[in-house]
Image 1 (spheres, one colour):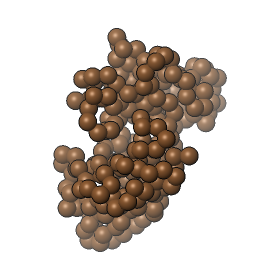
Image 2 (image 1 turned 45 degrees about the horizontal axis):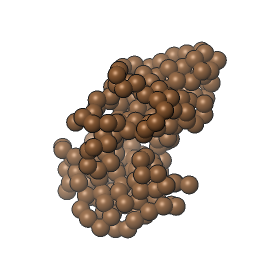
Image 3 (image 1 turned 135 degrees about the vertical axis):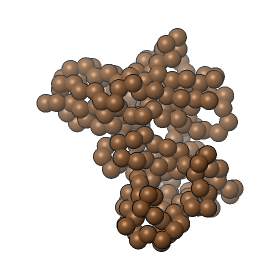
Image 4 (image 1 turned 180 degrees about the vertical axis):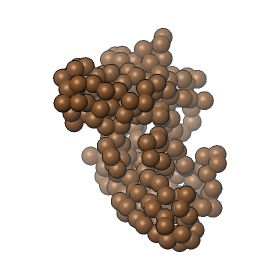
Length: 115
Length: 116
C-alpha cells in the first residue's frame, strides 16, 4: 500500500519569504514522487517530479523539492514566494514496483502568500 | 504538449437525469485514463482506471453502475453519471497516462457537476 501525508492544512508566508510545504510518503518499494498545484476551479498543474538521480529536483515557477529517503520526505520549497503562488498544493506518490500507474495524493496544503 | 481537455467545464442537471463528461488527450495517445472526484477543500479521490478497449477498474466503494466509464479510443474516455442525485455534485477530474513521459499523469481542467 502507498500513502502520502501533508501535515499542514495551510501555510502562510509573506511575499518574498521562503516557502516550504511538507510531504512524507510510505511505499513498499521505491517511490516516484510528484508535486502538483491547483488553482480554484481548475485541474492540477504539474510542478516537478522525482524519479531517480539527484535528490534535489528543480521544477516549474522556481519551485524545487528534496527527496530524502531516510526520512521518507519530499518537501516542496521556493526561496522567495510570490502572491501568485497562493493555491492548493498536492504531493503524490506512486510505488515503482506496483502494477499500474496509480497515484496516491496527500490531503493538500493551502498556501497563502500575503503581500 | 501533453494537453488533456474535459468537456463540459461545468454542468447543472436535474436529479434523476444522466450526465456525460468527456476527457480527451489532445496531442498524445493515452493508454490509461483515470477519473478522480474532488469534494470542496479536499483531496482527489481516485474513482476508476480505464484502459483503452477494456473495462474500467473501479476503486472500492465506487458504484460501477452509477459511474459508467468508457475508453473507446486512445484519445477519449467518458464518464457518465447515471440517475444523478444531489450527493453526486462534485468536481470531476480526469488524467491521462502514456504521453511524452511514462512517469507522470496529465490532468484535465476538471468538470463541475451540480445536481439540483
